[in-house]
Structures are given as C-alpha cells and as structure tokens.
Length: 146
Image (tube, rainbow, N blue to C red; front, top):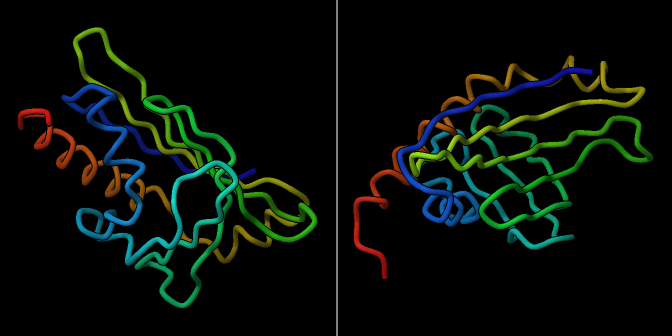
C-alpha cells in the first residue's frame, strides 16, 4: 500500500473550514494544484478532478462518505478493485476553536504497485492544498457571519 498525507492547523472552526472544503468548484481559485473539479460533493456523486501536475490525466472518484464539519471521503481506482484509491479529508475541532485539517490518500489492491509507478509524489500537492485552504478559511473567519 502507498499513502500520501498532509495536515495543517487552521485558526478557524470547522463551521468556517467545511464550506471552503466542500466548495470543490472554487478550489481552483485558491489551490493552484487544481485546474478544476466537475461535480458536486453529494454522497454517491461522481467527481472529476483536473490537477495541474497531471494535466493529461483527469481522474474520477465517487463521494463515499460525508460527515458535515468532520469528514469527506472519495474512492476511485481501476475497475474490479484492481487498484483502489481512497482520499479522506478530516477536520478535527480543537478546544481553542481551531481545526486540524488532514488530507490522506491510500492506494491499495493487487495492482496498486502498477498505479503507484505512474502516480507522482502527492505530498507536496497535499501540503499546497492545506496551505491554500488554511489561508482562505482564516481570512473568512475574520469576516462577519451572514
């Protein structure tokens, strides 16, 4: 199994972070690692992600879990479970009102090694994603609600 992960502490509560996270259509505005995302974050919905680091290979995933303010999970990969890609976005509310965001992707299945050879190191991209989400959520947290 191959895994990638990044985490950051955000000075904003999950109620401010969650809307930024699930607005996948807006990711391109603050995360230069994403050109665009087609689809919506709805349980069972298919999303297609166009990443800048792999321009010629958009990838599709299915939203398999949504826990508002807590977690979102996507699943994709090769047909018949030959390789499974599971990405999780987790928000951990902190006692001081902040949030820890963790983005993790696991590759498993009998053909995961083959898939891994064609997948670049996603850790830098995940760190970039976390930094962009942190910046926007913190900026929004200083703005009045409404």
